[in-house]
Image 1 (cartoon, rainbow, N blue to C red):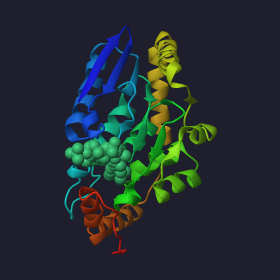
Image 2: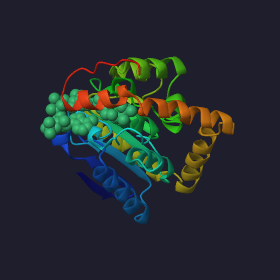
Image 3: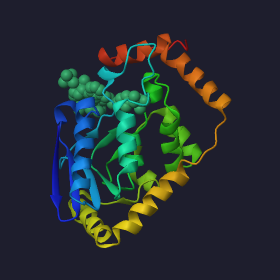
Length: 257
Ligand code: YXS
């Protein structure tokens, strides 16, 4: 599902399951998480997370066939996507998302959870909970809020439409848009630059920024209200309709219940 490489202090994870458009299935996520622990054991200081060269789809996001049936939180603590996001945020060194192709749903959040994003001009990014009637979870929405102005986060989440890389770069959501011929050279030059700097200082700053970015007080009452609202969504007719429509490769008909 993936290939990994270590060159000096730089590790590369290549998503390599194009037949299923690199969906973030439990198996693929487990392999990415295992790769990060291999990198930790080999004192890797900077990671490049990428798809195979020439990929039309970087990742199609959460594996819809693995979304649980009604009555279970589709993005609970142990969900593969939630585990992946936490592992990316907790990895000691910076992770550079190198993007060719389209990025969908949970993969969009995965890219935003990386530390630096470098994409080709034709890369696109689509946040899709509203397309499937999935009740996104609080830490997931915080990933979007930490990466984008709330109006842009809302436009991405409410329209579920792919957004072009150059627009996200203009808003500082993507660090660099680089032509595909220079993408690898540019990305690995930055990775080498980071790897030559002080790893302790960088890993501590990364962890401090993670803590600061997640420092939002929420009352127990607010938390319970949110969980109750989310339960209404994943217990709804529309939740089942979203998954069924995807499976039947047709447009969903949402009834708002
Ligand atoms: O029919 P086969 O068996 O060959 O499988 C097809 C697709 O069913 C499969 N596939 C997926 N399977 C599970 N989950 C997915 N997300 C998924 N995406 C694709 O991969 C095989 C090839 O797909 P196909 O024929 O559609 O490829 P294509 O090149 O024509 O189109 C590529 C895409 C990415 C435009 C298209 O596959 C697509 O629109 N995929 C769904 C993108 C999406 O809406 N992802 C959101 C997933 S839900 C999620 O991430 C979160 C829960 S949330 O929504 O809350 O953010």
